[in-house]
Length: 434
Image 1 (cartoon, one colour):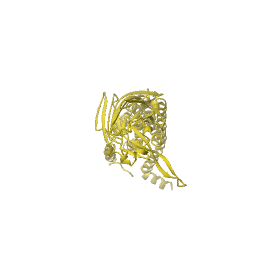
Image 2 (cartoon, rainbow, N blue to C red; image 1 turned 45 degrees about the vertical axis):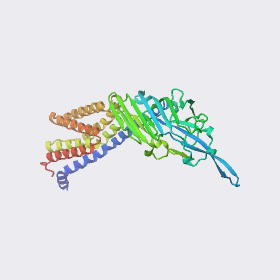
Image 3 (cartoon, rainbow, N blue to C red; image 1 turned 90 degrees about the horizontal axis):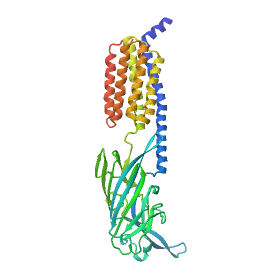
Image 4 (tube, one colour; image 1 turned 120 degrees about the vertical axis):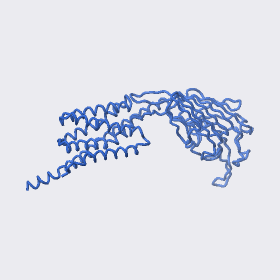
């Protein structure tokens, strides 16, 4: 019986060793799950730091307006059939709106975390050709002319650095927050319109200068029948975001400049309406001053290739055992696997201080050196140690290229795996598997 078992083991020990290595590879994926959770935790801390700085400085800013609101009344019958006057609101957006913005970025730190904030000076101008009440079937005698209000909405008024004045024709209006709030504008800056300006049915010209602080995003709502926005900054890594991309953009190492032209035909809300509300922010557009290298996203992508790194390394050890009749214990496989996993913790911790690329180099060199020295001591072969060092260098170099080539990662990964499989098949072609 013992002879039968011994014969069975001798004939199938390669299969059993291969199954054991496969099980070890799957078990070593468990630490990568904890590493991924660690990356998510550090990323959440970065968001908390960003939110804390933004709360004290000013949040992302969205600019809307100015918009003119004119109240009127409708007569309806109450429950007893008696006529009652109900106050309604009519909203009018400008025919021409022009915004020029110069953004001055600043980098603030909360501990080890970097947060991008900015200050900007907005030059806003435009005009109303006329307020067309007849288009909305509002009789002139039902309009409350002296209660017309101009609204200018800033998403975070904490970012204002000085008082805001809106010049309407020849009058200068002091805008104050929330005095005439309504369903459409709950917290906007506002002011009563000059007496007679709305009732004259003449063109209305407006202009204003706004000095503002914000964090990361600066967005604009295209309230004009034709909206022209021009933004320039010394920040050289902008991300143009929102509902519309710029018609003209110029990004250089010294900064960027971008111009948008948006027509009212491109939006899903009208130029004037009454007695309802619209989500104006859904049509906003602008720029995001993002940090170009997000080490947490790149670390996450590198962890996804952990199974590739572990599998190729263990396959190399397995082939060394078969081809050169070397013996590698299961515990030694585990130690090498742990070294491969610790690479990702080194990468994450260093990337918070010196950036992803430098951290990848440091972590890769440390891991390669550790495993190479261990292999030299384990196999008593300088040749095998050099081979493993070259293999790990190739693997880490290949994974680094995949991380950098986001759009071509699948193509390059498929080609790389095909080449790796071909190499394994080549070296295993003369192995006697039984």
